[in-house]
Image (cartoon, rainbow, N blue to C red; front, side, top):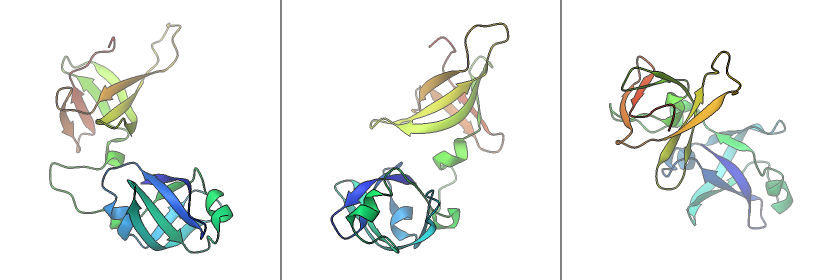
Length: 167
């Protein structure tokens, strides 16, 4: 859902940079999971949007120093707290691992991650090593926009793009 970017105020609230423009799931989930070993599953006491970020009070985080100690922690929530989607919608996490193929039928690799550059999401595609090549594993960055992403087949776990290996 996002990551802790730092403290908010002096009472132990944390600031969360979300991976999505829609933070509804994060705002309404009462339990979060932080990838800091001393926390793991934590109860969210209060949350709100502030200057484009989510700020929240978490059980067991008292004071600014405790909130700052969480900086960099990944924030996750249970899938059951995600808002329902329309038939033609999906979450980014659902695309990780999908095979990427171009319009000519050439396999380009698989989705290893997505990122947001502010204007639109970008597919981070892991390109397989070419045997006998000096190049190590590469990465393609494909804008997730209609001009380049032609189809997303969730059942087949395949995305068809108008893109080439030499772009």
